[in-house]
Picture 1 (cartoon, rainbow, N blue to C red):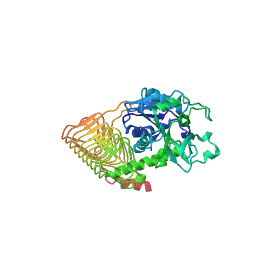
Picture 2 (spheres, one colour):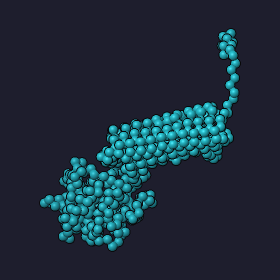
Picture 3 (cartoon, rainbow, N blue to C red):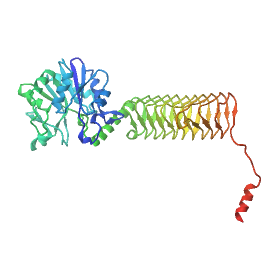
Picture 4 (cartoon, helix red, strand yellow):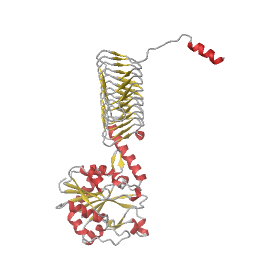
Length: 459
């Protein structure tokens, strides 16, 4: 938007969170709170955006997208001081400044657009986004005179009559940049907290004959900052509900939205059905026509079309091709790849393992550091012994191999195409193509031994 500049305030620790983590770094729907705010701000396409950082500045700085400028507030001296730090980075900016707090992740781009439009329409020097709430404790109050905004008074400085006011300052503003710069020169710290309040700019601008306007937000909750764990949980619920509504509108079936947890960064194609209790985290991508039965945890993974996750499986940083089946109770650890039409069954664990197209590991197996070809049958109880206590080694199993139950592969080892591994075998050396590998002690039957043994015990 031409002539629009933005400052996001993200320097505070957030003492009411009672956390060693800076407030804007607390996760919401799978990503830090600040990133939700930034997404809404950047949707406006401002000419330049500055983020004021302070506590845990390096961690916050690492999150900033390219083109967003960090502005370091070395000492937290108040919001007016923070605004000045941001303006120093936006050197030469002239026009409209949108200032928002980094802890307002529910404040959507449409509301911000509305605030900017109101500011321009009323030709104001300052336009404040306000909210009417029943319990305004902790928020600065909007004081009006003859319907016009006279000033903003902070909770700690408010008189008894002012404390009864229900209209509050959301902390989101539009400024005429020239008016703001002039007013900041006159802000003083003579208040209960000894800080330079940005809210004092309102009275300063009015004294100089400037115009101050207000725009009440339609949904008060969306404009409020997050200051506690309870408010964090409420915001999580609202963002999650928005994500689920958006996905359902796009053609995804979510059977129980209140019990389905999907990251803001996840992508899910139409005609996928998601049962209750699924958690889909990170930048997971799920193709169309998938079925996710209850209780899966899927993080940072890619699922093709028509995949079935039968429930209570953990899938981490893995790739699953079309029409594969996973679970129930499977665990795909990072680096796992499952081919098309392959099956990973109950209580099967993969770690840095690739299971080829049409292959099956149906139950009770561990495949670690393994490359398994196409149309391979992995019998129950199969283990790739990939770790000798010092290093990891790889097992390679060719196409069309049949692995009998209770087999162990002592890596590094390679099994050729079409080989058959007899049940109960421990494979310690390579198996040629189409060979039978058998490594178990010959069976010995002793006639009547059990009967005689029982007789001896009775004597």
